[in-house]
Length: 384
Image 1 (cartoon, helix red, strand yellow):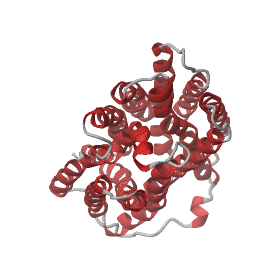
Image 2 (image 1 turned 90 degrees about the horizontal axis):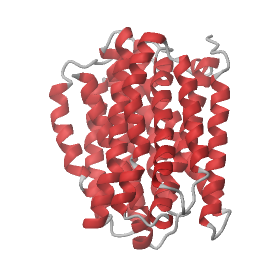
Image 3 (image 1 turned 45 degrees about the horizontal axis):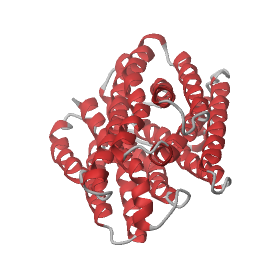
Protein backbone atom coordinates (compact mmCIF):
# COMPACT_ATOMS: atom_id res chain seq x y z
CA UNK A 1 0.00 0.00 0.00
CA UNK A 2 2.65 2.55 1.03
CA UNK A 3 4.92 2.01 -2.03
CA UNK A 4 1.87 2.29 -4.28
CA UNK A 5 0.84 5.62 -2.77
CA UNK A 6 4.41 6.90 -3.03
CA UNK A 7 4.45 5.88 -6.69
CA UNK A 8 1.13 7.65 -7.32
CA UNK A 9 2.54 10.80 -5.72
CA UNK A 10 5.57 10.60 -7.99
CA UNK A 11 3.24 10.11 -10.96
CA UNK A 12 1.17 13.19 -10.04
CA UNK A 13 4.28 15.37 -9.80
CA UNK A 14 5.97 13.97 -12.91
CA UNK A 15 2.92 14.75 -15.05
CA UNK A 16 4.69 18.08 -15.39
CA UNK A 17 6.20 16.48 -18.50
CA UNK A 18 2.98 17.61 -20.21
CA UNK A 19 4.55 21.05 -20.21
CA UNK A 20 7.43 20.29 -22.57
CA UNK A 21 5.40 19.59 -25.70
CA UNK A 22 3.60 22.90 -25.01
CA UNK A 23 6.85 24.90 -25.22
CA UNK A 24 6.27 26.07 -28.81
CA UNK A 25 2.74 27.27 -27.94
CA UNK A 26 3.96 28.93 -24.73
CA UNK A 27 6.79 30.62 -26.61
CA UNK A 28 4.24 32.15 -28.95
CA UNK A 29 1.82 33.15 -26.18
CA UNK A 30 4.45 34.83 -24.00
CA UNK A 31 6.68 36.08 -26.81
CA UNK A 32 9.81 34.16 -25.71
CA UNK A 33 12.11 31.81 -27.66
CA UNK A 34 13.73 28.42 -26.94
CA UNK A 35 16.61 30.00 -25.00
CA UNK A 36 14.29 32.05 -22.75
CA UNK A 37 11.73 29.28 -22.23
CA UNK A 38 14.39 27.50 -20.18
CA UNK A 39 13.19 29.53 -17.17
CA UNK A 40 9.94 27.56 -17.22
CA UNK A 41 12.10 24.54 -16.40
CA UNK A 42 14.71 26.17 -14.17
CA UNK A 43 12.32 27.98 -11.82
CA UNK A 44 10.48 24.72 -11.16
CA UNK A 45 13.26 22.16 -11.18
CA UNK A 46 15.87 24.20 -9.31
CA UNK A 47 13.33 24.93 -6.59
CA UNK A 48 12.42 21.31 -6.04
CA UNK A 49 16.08 20.33 -6.24
CA UNK A 50 16.87 22.68 -3.36
CA UNK A 51 13.70 21.74 -1.48
CA UNK A 52 14.05 17.97 -1.75
CA UNK A 53 16.88 17.45 0.75
CA UNK A 54 15.35 19.82 3.31
CA UNK A 55 11.99 18.05 2.84
CA UNK A 56 13.57 14.64 3.38
CA UNK A 57 15.37 15.81 6.52
CA UNK A 58 12.16 17.39 7.82
CA UNK A 59 10.30 14.14 7.11
CA UNK A 60 12.84 12.24 9.24
CA UNK A 61 11.87 14.55 12.10
CA UNK A 62 8.08 14.93 11.78
CA UNK A 63 7.20 11.81 9.78
CA UNK A 64 7.25 11.07 6.07
CA UNK A 65 3.47 11.08 5.51
CA UNK A 66 2.68 14.69 6.59
CA UNK A 67 5.43 16.09 4.38
CA UNK A 68 4.30 13.95 1.44
CA UNK A 69 0.65 15.04 1.76
CA UNK A 70 1.60 18.72 2.15
CA UNK A 71 3.55 18.46 -1.11
CA UNK A 72 0.50 17.10 -2.91
CA UNK A 73 -1.72 19.95 -1.68
CA UNK A 74 0.83 22.56 -2.72
CA UNK A 75 1.17 20.91 -6.11
CA UNK A 76 -2.59 21.07 -6.63
CA UNK A 77 -2.78 24.76 -5.73
CA UNK A 78 0.27 25.84 -7.72
CA UNK A 79 -0.61 24.10 -11.01
CA UNK A 80 -4.01 25.75 -10.84
CA UNK A 81 -2.29 29.12 -10.36
CA UNK A 82 0.11 28.44 -13.26
CA UNK A 83 -2.79 27.71 -15.58
CA UNK A 84 -4.47 31.00 -14.64
CA UNK A 85 -1.32 33.17 -14.60
CA UNK A 86 -1.91 36.60 -16.21
CA UNK A 87 1.69 37.17 -17.31
CA UNK A 88 5.03 35.43 -17.77
CA UNK A 89 6.38 36.94 -14.54
CA UNK A 90 3.47 35.69 -12.46
CA UNK A 91 3.69 32.35 -14.20
CA UNK A 92 7.35 31.88 -13.22
CA UNK A 93 6.54 32.81 -9.62
CA UNK A 94 3.86 30.12 -9.48
CA UNK A 95 6.37 27.67 -10.95
CA UNK A 96 8.57 28.30 -7.91
CA UNK A 97 5.66 27.38 -5.62
CA UNK A 98 5.07 24.26 -7.71
CA UNK A 99 8.74 23.38 -7.26
CA UNK A 100 8.38 23.50 -3.47
CA UNK A 101 5.43 21.10 -3.70
CA UNK A 102 7.37 18.73 -5.94
CA UNK A 103 10.35 18.83 -3.60
CA UNK A 104 8.17 17.86 -0.62
CA UNK A 105 6.85 14.83 -2.51
CA UNK A 106 10.14 13.70 -4.06
CA UNK A 107 12.06 14.30 -0.82
CA UNK A 108 9.78 12.15 1.34
CA UNK A 109 8.57 9.39 -1.03
CA UNK A 110 11.75 7.23 -1.26
CA UNK A 111 11.98 6.98 2.54
CA UNK A 112 8.30 6.03 2.75
CA UNK A 113 9.24 3.01 0.64
CA UNK A 114 12.53 1.94 2.22
CA UNK A 115 11.18 2.28 5.76
CA UNK A 116 8.09 0.20 4.97
CA UNK A 117 9.85 -2.73 3.23
CA UNK A 118 12.49 -5.29 4.24
CA UNK A 119 15.93 -4.85 2.67
CA UNK A 120 15.45 -7.64 0.13
CA UNK A 121 12.37 -5.92 -1.35
CA UNK A 122 13.49 -2.32 -1.33
CA UNK A 123 14.83 -2.46 -4.88
CA UNK A 124 11.41 -3.53 -6.14
CA UNK A 125 9.75 -0.81 -4.06
CA UNK A 126 12.05 1.85 -5.47
CA UNK A 127 11.44 0.34 -8.90
CA UNK A 128 7.70 0.90 -8.38
CA UNK A 129 8.42 4.50 -7.35
CA UNK A 130 10.53 5.03 -10.47
CA UNK A 131 7.82 3.36 -12.56
CA UNK A 132 5.22 5.80 -11.20
CA UNK A 133 7.50 8.72 -11.94
CA UNK A 134 8.26 7.41 -15.43
CA UNK A 135 4.60 6.73 -16.27
CA UNK A 136 3.82 10.34 -15.40
CA UNK A 137 6.70 11.48 -17.59
CA UNK A 138 5.50 9.13 -20.36
CA UNK A 139 1.81 9.99 -20.55
CA UNK A 140 2.35 13.70 -19.86
CA UNK A 141 3.58 14.61 -23.36
CA UNK A 142 0.68 12.79 -25.03
CA UNK A 143 -1.89 14.38 -22.73
CA UNK A 144 -0.16 17.72 -23.13
CA UNK A 145 -0.20 17.47 -26.92
CA UNK A 146 -3.89 16.62 -26.99
CA UNK A 147 -4.71 19.50 -24.64
CA UNK A 148 -2.61 22.04 -26.54
CA UNK A 149 -4.28 21.10 -29.83
CA UNK A 150 -7.80 21.05 -28.35
CA UNK A 151 -7.88 23.65 -25.57
CA UNK A 152 -4.61 25.58 -25.45
CA UNK A 153 -1.41 25.46 -23.40
CA UNK A 154 -2.97 26.53 -20.09
CA UNK A 155 -4.72 23.18 -19.79
CA UNK A 156 -1.42 21.33 -19.46
CA UNK A 157 -1.47 22.81 -15.94
CA UNK A 158 -5.16 22.99 -15.14
CA UNK A 159 -5.89 19.28 -15.70
CA UNK A 160 -3.48 18.26 -12.92
CA UNK A 161 -5.02 20.28 -10.09
CA UNK A 162 -7.97 17.93 -9.38
CA UNK A 163 -5.73 14.86 -9.70
CA UNK A 164 -3.25 16.09 -7.10
CA UNK A 165 -6.05 17.26 -4.81
CA UNK A 166 -7.83 13.87 -4.99
CA UNK A 167 -4.60 12.06 -4.11
CA UNK A 168 -3.94 14.47 -1.24
CA UNK A 169 -7.42 13.72 0.13
CA UNK A 170 -6.98 9.96 -0.06
CA UNK A 171 -3.33 9.64 0.97
CA UNK A 172 -3.67 10.15 4.77
CA UNK A 173 -5.86 7.08 5.20
CA UNK A 174 -3.65 4.99 2.93
CA UNK A 175 -0.53 6.08 4.81
CA UNK A 176 -1.96 5.58 8.29
CA UNK A 177 0.54 2.78 8.92
CA UNK A 178 3.46 4.60 7.33
CA UNK A 179 6.67 5.27 9.29
CA UNK A 180 6.30 8.03 11.85
CA UNK A 181 8.76 10.27 13.63
CA UNK A 182 12.23 8.79 13.94
CA UNK A 183 13.06 8.17 17.59
CA UNK A 184 16.78 8.88 17.10
CA UNK A 185 16.52 11.41 14.32
CA UNK A 186 19.59 13.37 13.32
CA UNK A 187 20.64 15.29 10.25
CA UNK A 188 23.08 13.85 7.76
CA UNK A 189 26.41 15.45 8.56
CA UNK A 190 28.84 16.86 6.02
CA UNK A 191 31.41 14.13 6.67
CA UNK A 192 28.76 11.52 5.86
CA UNK A 193 27.96 13.24 2.57
CA UNK A 194 31.68 13.46 1.73
CA UNK A 195 32.26 9.70 1.95
CA UNK A 196 33.76 8.67 -1.43
CA UNK A 197 31.01 6.27 -2.44
CA UNK A 198 28.25 8.73 -1.51
CA UNK A 199 29.90 11.44 -3.61
CA UNK A 200 30.31 8.97 -6.47
CA UNK A 201 26.65 7.87 -6.44
CA UNK A 202 25.40 11.47 -6.25
CA UNK A 203 27.74 12.48 -9.07
CA UNK A 204 26.36 9.67 -11.25
CA UNK A 205 22.78 10.83 -10.64
CA UNK A 206 23.81 14.39 -11.47
CA UNK A 207 25.60 13.49 -14.71
CA UNK A 208 23.01 10.99 -15.99
CA UNK A 209 20.20 13.51 -15.62
CA UNK A 210 22.28 16.39 -16.97
CA UNK A 211 22.86 14.37 -20.13
CA UNK A 212 19.28 13.24 -20.71
CA UNK A 213 17.59 16.60 -20.21
CA UNK A 214 18.69 17.80 -23.64
CA UNK A 215 15.87 15.52 -24.82
CA UNK A 216 13.27 17.30 -22.69
CA UNK A 217 14.33 20.80 -23.72
CA UNK A 218 15.08 20.45 -27.44
CA UNK A 219 13.24 17.36 -28.72
CA UNK A 220 9.78 19.04 -28.64
CA UNK A 221 11.05 21.78 -30.98
CA UNK A 222 12.63 19.18 -33.27
CA UNK A 223 9.43 17.13 -33.44
CA UNK A 224 7.07 20.07 -33.97
CA UNK A 225 9.17 22.59 -35.91
CA UNK A 226 11.58 20.36 -37.89
CA UNK A 227 9.50 17.22 -38.53
CA UNK A 228 6.34 19.37 -38.73
CA UNK A 229 4.32 17.10 -36.45
CA UNK A 230 1.25 18.28 -34.57
CA UNK A 231 1.57 18.70 -30.82
CA UNK A 232 -0.42 15.47 -30.39
CA UNK A 233 1.75 13.44 -32.78
CA UNK A 234 4.90 15.00 -31.36
CA UNK A 235 3.78 14.17 -27.83
CA UNK A 236 3.09 10.57 -28.83
CA UNK A 237 6.61 10.18 -30.21
CA UNK A 238 8.24 12.15 -27.41
CA UNK A 239 6.70 9.89 -24.77
CA UNK A 240 8.96 7.03 -25.88
CA UNK A 241 11.78 8.38 -23.70
CA UNK A 242 9.88 8.23 -20.39
CA UNK A 243 8.02 5.11 -21.57
CA UNK A 244 11.40 3.43 -21.93
CA UNK A 245 12.22 4.46 -18.36
CA UNK A 246 8.88 3.08 -17.19
CA UNK A 247 9.53 -0.25 -18.92
CA UNK A 248 13.03 -0.61 -17.50
CA UNK A 249 12.36 0.52 -13.91
CA UNK A 250 10.49 -2.52 -12.45
CA UNK A 251 12.83 -4.97 -14.17
CA UNK A 252 15.79 -3.01 -12.87
CA UNK A 253 14.33 -3.03 -9.35
CA UNK A 254 13.87 -6.80 -9.40
CA UNK A 255 17.36 -7.34 -10.78
CA UNK A 256 18.85 -5.02 -8.16
CA UNK A 257 17.33 -7.09 -5.34
CA UNK A 258 18.51 -10.32 -6.94
CA UNK A 259 21.95 -9.50 -8.35
CA UNK A 260 23.03 -6.18 -6.85
CA UNK A 261 23.08 -2.77 -8.43
CA UNK A 262 26.58 -2.15 -9.78
CA UNK A 263 26.32 -3.95 -13.16
CA UNK A 264 22.96 -2.32 -13.94
CA UNK A 265 24.30 1.17 -13.27
CA UNK A 266 26.94 0.83 -16.00
CA UNK A 267 24.59 -0.93 -18.41
CA UNK A 268 22.02 1.82 -18.08
CA UNK A 269 24.54 4.60 -18.65
CA UNK A 270 25.90 2.84 -21.75
CA UNK A 271 22.41 2.60 -23.25
CA UNK A 272 21.66 6.24 -22.41
CA UNK A 273 24.84 7.47 -24.10
CA UNK A 274 24.11 5.40 -27.22
CA UNK A 275 20.64 6.93 -27.48
CA UNK A 276 21.94 10.47 -27.09
CA UNK A 277 24.54 10.01 -29.82
CA UNK A 278 21.84 8.58 -32.11
CA UNK A 279 19.70 11.69 -31.52
CA UNK A 280 22.68 13.88 -32.44
CA UNK A 281 22.52 12.38 -35.96
CA UNK A 282 18.83 13.13 -36.60
CA UNK A 283 17.73 15.68 -39.21
CA UNK A 284 14.64 16.74 -41.14
CA UNK A 285 14.71 13.56 -43.26
CA UNK A 286 15.19 11.06 -40.42
CA UNK A 287 12.61 8.24 -40.55
CA UNK A 288 10.20 7.90 -37.68
CA UNK A 289 11.62 4.51 -36.67
CA UNK A 290 15.09 5.99 -36.19
CA UNK A 291 13.71 8.87 -34.12
CA UNK A 292 11.66 6.44 -32.02
CA UNK A 293 14.62 4.12 -31.40
CA UNK A 294 16.89 6.94 -30.30
CA UNK A 295 14.34 8.45 -27.91
CA UNK A 296 13.39 5.07 -26.43
CA UNK A 297 17.02 4.06 -25.89
CA UNK A 298 17.71 7.13 -23.75
CA UNK A 299 14.70 6.28 -21.58
CA UNK A 300 15.59 2.60 -21.25
CA UNK A 301 19.10 3.50 -20.17
CA UNK A 302 17.93 5.99 -17.57
CA UNK A 303 15.39 3.52 -16.16
CA UNK A 304 18.01 0.79 -15.85
CA UNK A 305 20.38 3.22 -14.11
CA UNK A 306 18.15 5.10 -11.68
CA UNK A 307 16.82 2.31 -9.48
CA UNK A 308 20.12 0.58 -8.56
CA UNK A 309 21.88 3.92 -8.10
CA UNK A 310 19.13 5.11 -5.73
CA UNK A 311 19.12 1.79 -3.86
CA UNK A 312 22.90 1.88 -3.35
CA UNK A 313 22.75 5.40 -1.95
CA UNK A 314 19.73 4.78 0.32
CA UNK A 315 21.48 1.69 1.71
CA UNK A 316 24.41 3.89 2.74
CA UNK A 317 22.37 5.57 5.50
CA UNK A 318 20.54 4.22 8.58
CA UNK A 319 16.74 4.23 8.98
CA UNK A 320 16.84 7.51 10.93
CA UNK A 321 18.31 9.24 7.86
CA UNK A 322 16.31 7.68 5.04
CA UNK A 323 14.38 10.88 4.39
CA UNK A 324 17.58 12.88 4.10
CA UNK A 325 19.12 10.22 1.85
CA UNK A 326 16.09 10.19 -0.44
CA UNK A 327 16.09 13.97 -0.57
CA UNK A 328 19.81 13.98 -1.36
CA UNK A 329 19.50 11.69 -4.38
CA UNK A 330 16.50 13.69 -5.60
CA UNK A 331 18.51 16.90 -5.20
CA UNK A 332 21.42 15.44 -7.19
CA UNK A 333 19.07 14.25 -9.92
CA UNK A 334 17.30 17.58 -10.23
CA UNK A 335 20.43 19.71 -10.02
CA UNK A 336 21.61 17.63 -12.97
CA UNK A 337 18.41 18.56 -14.79
CA UNK A 338 18.98 22.26 -14.08
CA UNK A 339 22.58 22.03 -15.28
CA UNK A 340 21.43 20.05 -18.32
CA UNK A 341 18.83 22.56 -19.43
CA UNK A 342 21.30 25.42 -18.92
CA UNK A 343 24.07 23.64 -20.84
CA UNK A 344 21.83 22.51 -23.69
CA UNK A 345 20.32 25.98 -23.96
CA UNK A 346 23.76 27.64 -24.04
CA UNK A 347 25.11 25.27 -26.69
CA UNK A 348 21.95 25.56 -28.77
CA UNK A 349 21.91 29.36 -28.48
CA UNK A 350 25.55 29.56 -29.55
CA UNK A 351 24.58 28.40 -33.06
CA UNK A 352 22.28 31.36 -33.69
CA UNK A 353 19.57 30.77 -36.26
CA UNK A 354 20.69 27.26 -37.26
CA UNK A 355 18.39 24.99 -35.28
CA UNK A 356 19.80 21.66 -36.44
CA UNK A 357 23.42 22.74 -35.91
CA UNK A 358 22.69 23.72 -32.32
CA UNK A 359 20.55 20.62 -31.84
CA UNK A 360 23.35 18.33 -33.05
CA UNK A 361 26.00 20.06 -30.92
CA UNK A 362 23.85 19.87 -27.79
CA UNK A 363 23.32 16.13 -28.15
CA UNK A 364 26.96 15.37 -28.92
CA UNK A 365 27.88 17.08 -25.65
CA UNK A 366 25.05 15.28 -23.83
CA UNK A 367 26.33 11.92 -25.11
CA UNK A 368 29.84 12.81 -23.97
CA UNK A 369 28.54 13.62 -20.47
CA UNK A 370 26.83 10.22 -20.34
CA UNK A 371 30.11 8.56 -21.35
CA UNK A 372 31.84 10.44 -18.52
CA UNK A 373 29.24 9.08 -16.11
CA UNK A 374 29.79 5.57 -17.46
CA UNK A 375 33.53 5.83 -16.88
CA UNK A 376 32.95 7.12 -13.34
CA UNK A 377 30.61 4.19 -12.64
CA UNK A 378 33.37 1.73 -13.51
CA UNK A 379 35.60 3.04 -10.73
CA UNK A 380 35.59 0.98 -7.50
CA UNK A 381 32.83 1.98 -5.07
CA UNK A 382 34.97 2.79 -2.03
CA UNK A 383 33.03 2.79 1.20
CA UNK A 384 34.32 4.64 4.17
